[in-house]
Image (cartoon, rainbow, N blue to C red; front, side):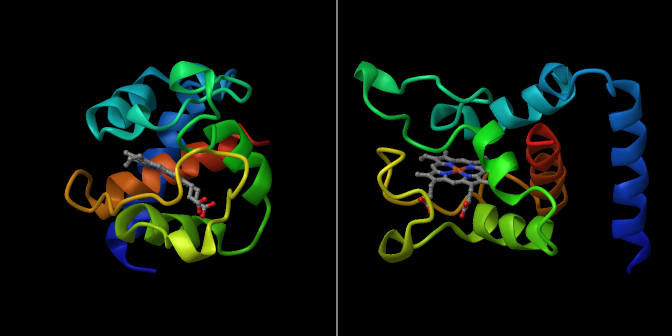
Length: 126
Ligand code: HEC
């Protein structure tokens, strides 16, 4: 593990401990998600409809957290998908969301911040 990623985890652990009670109410993560454009397509809580009452464009992050929490390597796996986008030919959320695939977000967010959001998303499913 590089010093940089270790420092990232330390910072995350610190941030997480100050908001330990309710991960859903993490204002810092909400701000990062909003500034990175994620919330155009994702809601945090499950069960929220998308525009026009259709299925949401992307899966609610609570559902993503439930789907992947506890799976080994989920953090790296999801960070890659967030940065590079997903393939419309192998949708992981087919039938549950109205978007076919996620465009690459690497233009809007750094790898470190993508990982911070993914770690938060995974914590939402616990
Ligand atoms: C233009 C719409 C859009 C934006 C913007 C967007 N997403 Fe997504 N996202 C999607 C869709 C659609 C899916 C479902 C893809 C699938 O079915 O495989 C998805 C899936 C995901 C998943 C689950 C991946 C999987 O394979 O299960 C994560 C995690 C995620 N997004 C995080 C983010 C983060 C973090 C951001 C902001 C940096 C972001 N998304 C921005 C549309 C978007």
